[in-house]
Each structure stands twice: as structure tokens, then as C-alpha cells.
Amino acid sequence: MTEADRLAYLAGEASSVKMPYMLLGGFLLLIAILFTVNRLPEFSEEEGEEGGSIRGALRHPHLVWAVVAQLFYVGAQVCVTSFFVRAAIAGGGVDEKTAGYYLGVYGLLFMVGRFAGTLLLSFAQPSRLLSLYAAACILLSLVAVNADGRFVVLALGGLGFFMSIMFPTIFSLGIEGLGEDTKPASALIVMSIIGGALFPVLMGDIIDRNGDNIQSGYLVPLGCYLVVLMFGLYGYKQRKTA
Amino acid sequence: MDNQSHAKPANGTGKSYLLPMVLVTSLFFLWGISNNLNGILIPHLRKALQLTNRQSTFVDTAVYLAYFLSAIPAGMLLKRYGYRKGIIAGLLVFSLGAFLFVPAADMRRYEVFLLGLFIIGCGLTILETAANPYATKLGDPARATARLNLAQSFNGLAAFLAPVIGTVFIP
Image 1 (cartoon, each protein chain N blue to C red):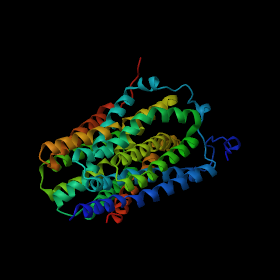
Image 2 (image 1 turned 60 degrees about the vertical axis):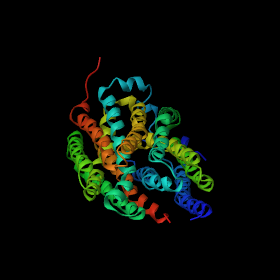
Image 3 (image 1 turned 180 degrees about the vertical axis):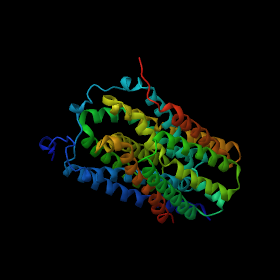
Image 4 (image 1 turned 30 degrees about the horizontal axis):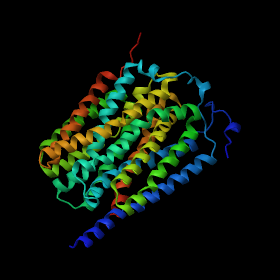
């Protein structure tokens, strides 16, 4: 392949990302129009949200716990998802397209987990279910680090299933009982998504240092699930503060 | 065209929350599409732009750094303008970032992709800050967690569809 051929090939690879993002941008504009023309209920200050503050929110220990747990949870989720295709190519021995379909199946398991979780949460205690799912993720991460390639892909699928209720459950447990501080509290929990900026880089570094061994990187999400488990067992509890 | 001043106050007395819930749920779906295209985008850009492993994770860093930096401004924006206008602003910012992928791909410049992803992240922050509590408030408070999980289920649907859509465009 000549240099010109190589550049043409790379340019083709790069331009293949244009269409999905153009479609996405178009849909977003359409939904923005629907929000503009429809009158939606607004929950405004007279419903007791005035005077809420970040300092007020931080006086609730269970909210602080939720922010920390969400930081680690998002870190774990982004690590598992971002390295999924590479793990499937390395472990399962498939090409990029097939690995992409596997990622879809992983996403499907995520969706099934959400629906199952929605049903379970109608009667199960959210903190209990969260703890149970975190424990399952810890076991599956151990499999991802130690098992043969094919089992790694299966373990990652399991992680998708058990991670699926974590974000919304940590979120609602965290803002429970926050009253007027609900909006700043939810901003704080959303801010904890910085975990997604930090943990994948750490995972990438570990993989680089272990000679491109993707499996070694799953120690990072493993540590994250331990924090989620602590939140589900203890941190979620609402305490009286001075 | 802002009819908000004429809108009846939402007092939860028998008012149907179906349409608002459908529209808000569509937001969970759309940001799910964006987030879950990253799993395809990262290995693909790594190949197309000849990136190192570490560099390829900057896709995540750009999006999630945007979440971090815009969380407090987004909270202030919503406090001042309310959920509805905040959601519209979030959608417009999000689409701007998505459209930036066109020049980025034409120039084959990773920095422009990262800028687009950063702007997408800013739009996502506004949407998530508004839509998560908004979904919990659209009905019976006792069912808030279950309702939020239902909306998030459509985020999960996007987690299945986004990679499949993404692979269609891989040459």
C-alpha cells in the first residue's frame, strides 16, 4: 500500500463516522421543536424549591455518599463499555464489525437488566437490590481478569446486566429527602460523572503497562464496584445532621 | 413562541403526565445513543486516526470532562429558566456537537472530534440534570425510583441500538 493509498483508506475510515452523527443531530433538532411547541408542566419555585443550595445538599451524608458511589460507578461503566470491542476482538477473536454487534448484545443485556430492575424495584428495596447487583459485578470482574478470552466476553455481558440499575438507583437514593436542595443535589450527582473521564485513562495505562493485555485492566472496574457495594450496604442511609 | 405564561400550573391533580413522560423518555434514548456510539467510535477512531491506546480513551475524557465542568452552570441554568427551557437549550448544544463531526472527519483532526465530543457532553449535562429529577416528579412520589428506572430503560434500548447502527457505517 502506497502512502497515498494509506491516506485515502484512513480518510474513508474517518468519514464513515459522519452519517450517524448527522442523523443524530437532525433528530435532536426535531425533539427540540417538539419541546418548543408542547406545553409541559413546569415544577417551579413555588413548589418549595427556592433557597436550595449545594452547601445545603452537602449537609446530607447520604448525598455525599451517592456522589462518590456514582463517580466510581460511572468510571466502571465507561471502562467496561469503552474497552468492550477491544476485549471481544482480543478474547473472542472476531473482527471490528462482529465485535460491534457483540457490543449491541451487551447493550441488550443492559436493557433487559433495566426492565427487570424496574419490575424488581416495584417491591424490592432499592438499596438491597443495588448491593446484590454490585456483589455480582465484583464476581464477574474477577472472571474478566482471570478467565480465558471467550469467558471474558460472557463476563462482560453479565456486567452489562447487573450494572444497568446502578445509575438511576444511586441517583434516586441520593436525592431522597433532599427537598428544596434536590436540583443542586442532582447537579452534584451528575458532576460525579467525571469518573468516566478518569478511570478509562487509568485502565488504558494499566493495559499499556501489561503489554496490551486488556484483561488486566478490569481490576479498575472491580475496585469501583466495591465502592458501589459499600454505598448499597451502608452509605445510602439517611442520617440526621447537626 | 413561548406559551409558558399561559400554561396551567402543574399541580398534579388528575393532569395526564403521558405526553411529558414520552418526550422526556425520548431524551434518555437520545443521550443513550450518543453515549453508546462511543464504544464503536473509540476503537474506530483509534484505527482511522492512528492513535495510541491511551489517546483513544480521550474520547471518554472529552465527554465526561464536559459533564464535570458544565454540571454547576447547568444547575444554575435550570434554577433560573426551569426544566423546559433548559431541556431545549441542552438539545441545541448537543446537536451542535454532533454536527461538528462533519468538519472533524473531513479534516481528519482528532482535536476537532474531541471538541465536538466536549460540546456534546455539555448538552448532555444540561439534559441529564433536567431530565432525571423531571422524570421523578411526573407523578406519584412513591413511584419515583421505578419511574426513573422506566425512563432509563430507554437509555438501555439505545445501548442496544447504538452499536448496531454504528456498525452499519463501519466500512
